[in-house]
Length: 287
Image (cartoon, rainbow, N blue to C red; front, side, top):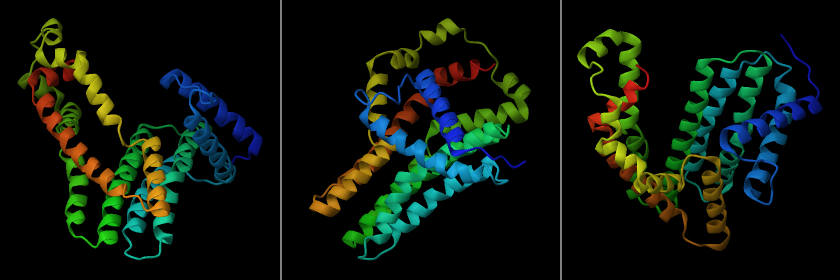
């Protein structure tokens, strides 16, 4: 079915939905410039550009999952353009442009899904998958840029560590393994690992106490620095521009921090997730 919404209808709908969604789920007022100037400006760019794109997309037969897959492919394009070894900065600027504007595409799949009543679990997964690919592509692209800029193969070894550290996070593997067991053979999981420990015991466990104290707050703060969210990507893009225009050496140190941060997160994952109390508490939540 082909839809023919006007641009005003699309803008009104997407603004209304995003205002409500951000306020209810994140307690953020996207219209409050004084408290959140970056959020205000970025969401205006985000919603205005996506409205223009949606004006075209609603008139096609495109499906939301197709948009999600295209969104994921932007991470690969960002990596490729940042990796091109040339003194001409055009490809770098184009890659940074993709990284900055990709949120425009990210808004479209959900709108199309709601409009055409095509919301699905696969769409939910693909949306997160697209963000994951874009994060890895952008961070690896930084390493390839540095390898070309300084003509140092050392950075190529560090580039390899980015996807490697993403892949070996024990929490991700544990969730994947447990979900697979629940889907494929839940009765076997329950028979081999029956529900024995009481919730009170889990609440008093070492890991539970660790999560409730200030260490968790410190970890959350540390994890939020140059994370996968748009605000961090945009900040790194700003540092790219400052380095190119003024000659300040910034991106190399940001890349070192990213690699170090991923290694620390892997170690913390090993410490927390390898503790049986943590796994028991998580699996018991869905039993």
